[in-house]
Image (cartoon, helix red, strand yellow):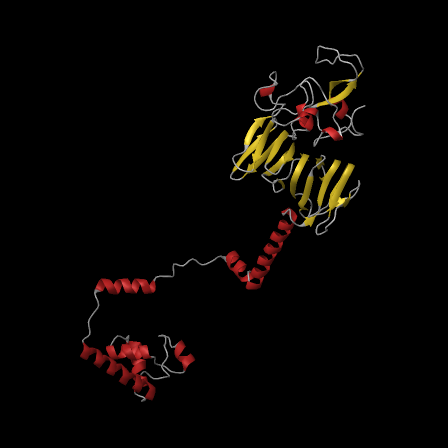
Length: 416
């Protein structure tokens, strides 16, 4: 091994002064091979004549190394390989060195700051979710109008209790209208009207943190109900379940007649998706659909559809008959029966009859000031036939609570 005190030394001897040794191992190797210049060789000779033990040890090690190399056979490397090796050794590093700005950014971006940035992103994402997700705040439905017998059953309660105007219904509450009609306000501009015989459950009534997105889910078990849904935001939803179907709407006005074996949906404005089983269809204004318990959804035009104009008896729902009796589709006419003076002849008959006679009058005049559905909407609600269906075609019966099982009744009872 070379001496421990051996250090590299420059020809001018500066490094020798620092290391306090005038000869380096490199000088000794060059001196042994005869590669030193005259001046350096002179200085090395003078130093060796002093008998420096470190240099003597280094010389012995160098000579042993050279002797071992000669015994094992010293092979000169190919000139081209030596040139390439020297070029690689002397070539400057080609790695890109970051500039001042990049190095400063790396120094400033410590692990603690990285964790803080990730935490801020998580908090920001959570706030945006709370603002947009329509599942944060629970709301209550307001009883805006009630007439007749209207009852509600809070979630978990065994008994029904009367409902009055101004009462509020929460998620899970049920409301039924055995005899009368009621109006519920869900959100601003979103309302529903329940006819006699209707039963409804509020499944979900929620909004986002700022109220921008809504989620309404209702369950209509039976009866007729009229829905008015204003345009909803992109993440909002309005869903209605019935015993046989699923109805969704983003903006529109429609009625639903729910029964155990089928559901009738009639659209008056906007679009509504009606689904049953594995089949669904999109309904637009002027269309109706029947969702059976089994089988595909059956689409048919409503009385407002041009397909039935001028042809009251063909295809789907007739637009008019002389009386308010149910038609072949089970939908009553949009007329209101009133009594005529004795001895007069109704407009739809040609023979006078004694006693009070029934004549038909458009229900538009009676409904205009009541805020109720129009006659065409009432005709399309899909009510089931009443016992009056067996009456003669030319005789109209007064409508009222005793002669109708569903639909809208004139406030105050039957016509005088």
